[in-house]
Image (cartoon, rainbow, N blue to C red; front, side, top):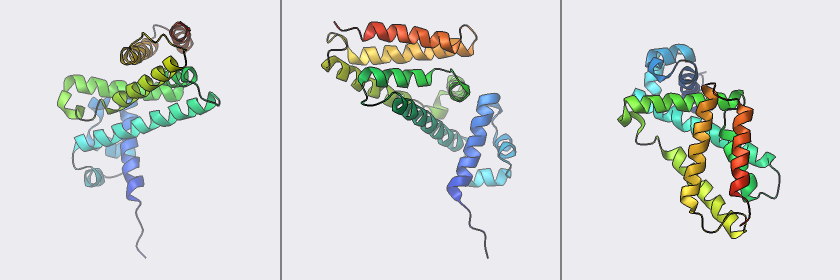
Length: 201
């Protein structure tokens, strides 16, 4: 009787092998052959599921985005109900900061993609900003909800506020990975900034 192959599981296995290489060695080391070795499969099998390296990079990037979204959802749920704009924004931004093993892995892997984009902008440029754009739009909605509830000054620009929050968290994350400050220190800075932002006018 022929063995049934779970093709989605095989694709996931290969894509996650690339993400492990990206985390520990950088994407410059993620050749198709290296990914095959990390996944424990043949090079031919990798090429069967992903005909080009770009296809593999983009598939793995989508999966990385899914991992980050799942982490955010867990942190939002842990913040308690009913969800408030302040609670949601705090949970989302805190979940991004590299404060534990999972978030450090995700941050390092995104950094590997950013490095690749700098050297080859066309490679992931078509989908590379999809996740940040979605996250920024989500934060804009939360800022507007907080303004309607009187928790944030109505005169603030929601788009600029959301963009600034993401830029701050990305910068804090880089400073943690670079050893400038601890994850706890980064969370303290974030909390202080949110205290000032959500101060009722």
